[in-house]
Structures are given as C-alpha cells and as structure tokens.
Amino acid sequence: MTDEMRARLEQLPTGELLAILRDRDLEEWRPEAFPLIEAILAERHVDVAAALESLGAAATYVDFEALTEIATFGTSVDAHLCRMALEEAEIPCWVFNDHLAGVHVPLAMVIGVSVRVRPEDEAAAREILEAVKAGAVAAPQDAIPCPRCGTETVRERTVDRLATLETALTTGPPLAQSKWQYRCASCGHIWD
Image 1 (spheres, rainbow, N blue to C red):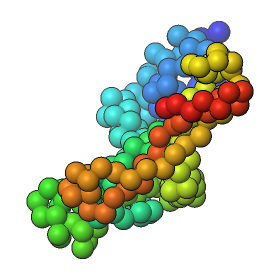
Image 2: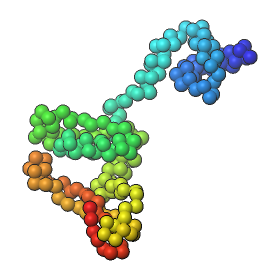
Image 3: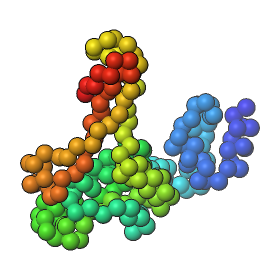
Image 4: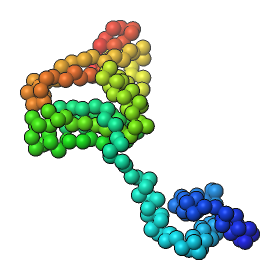
C-alpha cells in the first residue's frame, strides 16, 4: 500500500506536494502520506521548510501598487470608518496617508486619506459604501414589545439627526447620524 501511495505521489508536481504538506488535510490524505511527500521532495532537492514558508508568504502578499482606490477622505477618522464598514463585510482594505492627519491636518485634507481594496473586491466595496451613504444600517432582529401596551406590533425606523456642536467644531461640518426609533402599531407609542 505504501509503495502504491508513493508511486501516486511521485507523479504529482512539486507545487502540489508542497500544498498538501502546507494544508495537512487529514480528511483527504492519510497521515503516512506526509512523511512520503517530505522524502520525495528531499529527493527533488527541495528545502521543504523554506518552500513552505515561501508559500505562506505568497498567500498573504499584497501588491500595494495594484490596489484600487475606492474613496478619499479629508480626515483619517472618516477613512477608518469606511475601513471598518468594509472589514465588517469581510472585504480586506488598506488606508493610505492616514499618518498625515496626525502630523499636518491641512495637508491631509488636501492630499486626502484614501481607502484601497484589491481590484477583484472593487465592485463589492463600492456597493457597501453606497449602502452606507444611503443610510443602510442593520436593524435589531429580536421582536421588541411596546413598553406601554405590551404588543409586539412594533415598527422599527431610523431617524436622522445632526451631530453635536462639539463634533462639528472638531471635525468640520456636522455629519448625519442615525438612531433607531420604535413605534407601536397598536397604540402609537414612540420610543428609542
């Protein structure tokens, strides 16, 4: 059985053998396959440890020059809010020039703090940003009874409000914010 397995493994290219070693999927491969793969790679004069480290680095490598800019902001706070929305949607992204906002705010406002994604994630990222600009936020999922009459015929809605004066003075023009309000369909009671 081991000879048959070795013969089968020897037919595989080096890259596939390294991927098998990296993944070590015990549902797909028997445990005795891994020492055989290491022996085959040693016969092929492959430094297994270095090759596996290189494979791991390639998986996490990001070509920063190929990233696509999807938004530019005047402050690093806004850029990081955008980054957080994208990361919540599981879209990897990177913020560029955010250090300028801490060093020289006017320069950061001129150059801009940009948010970039991989080219293959651009469409999904733009869709997320459009939803955020439109005010789409997640609503609570549990049924909330009316505190006045106790029925569960409650409607959820968002109410836009302006930021506080303090925020306006520190970050510039007021930003629209949303909060959830509830309205009972039975008695008309409204609460936050």
